[in-house]
Length: 398
Image 1: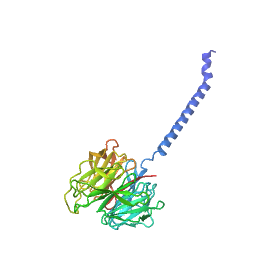
Image 2: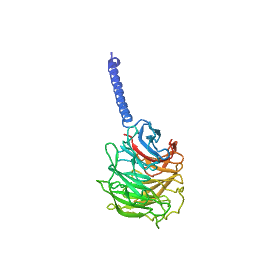
Image 3: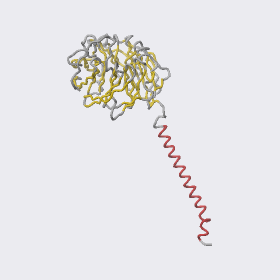
Image 4: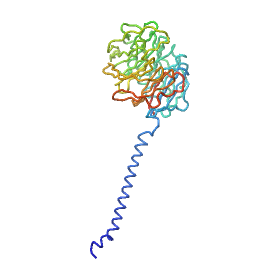
């Protein structure tokens, strides 16, 4: 027999062995790739619909705080146990620096509520001793970047209350000398990112006086306040502006002049905290009754300090502006629900939520990180489920 005749029979076992080896190797590689794929999807990325953050919404009408789980796509679902009782007239909120505690001002009962935050479930637990007494009509709340002190604007008390935070349980203790008085109709409070200064807006829509922003130095050890710069007018000539909403990126302070229907940017002196207008101040607004609601109302700077957004309460819209060395350039204006109040970004900065006081809804938007343009989320505005939502804060799920 020739070699050609013998080769098929002689090579058949070898061929079968080679085919078996290739098949086994392929299966092994597929298995390894599949395990790697499963690891990347299930361990490094949350499953579809799993919460990535939690949103807390104050409800002025019901005196409660609602808690929502927020998915990566912006879907909202109520946290078990929500809403959580706070106090009559619950409106403004602030979190400590590591999001362990949430503070809510209750303007109709002259108190501030404190909650411990479960960052895994979104559950809120009232801190022992809460609520704590403030001055008359507490409004805006701010916490210093170190999470040591809470500042509360007492509008009818013409003062600012300052509390130290017990880092272990969130209980509040009012500082000696608090409330700090001599501040006309304080409405907003904002702490500089370095914790050195507290900015306080004084709003008086009926008299046209006290429409200014004052800078106070914060004692880093005691939390006490000392006026460090003369109050800055928010219009030219001074008059009715009602500076209510404020936001800062550290270099600039942006003041929402409610009655003047404008936002005034100020540069911040790093040493004294003194404010200098970046552009011409707006003209003062005309007087109106207590039911008068002009825009803007609340402000928020995106996490990258590129854009600023604010709610226009009468117009029922959200404005977006580009920040260029403190100067503002309009990007877009998008419709919200009725009477938009507070607004907040999710930790990624890709989602922005606005609470609408009159129709009890939450408007959700996706934010283009390059252009600042916003697009409404599917199903927005979402029903909030409670009465008169007015403020919102959002934290990352841990």
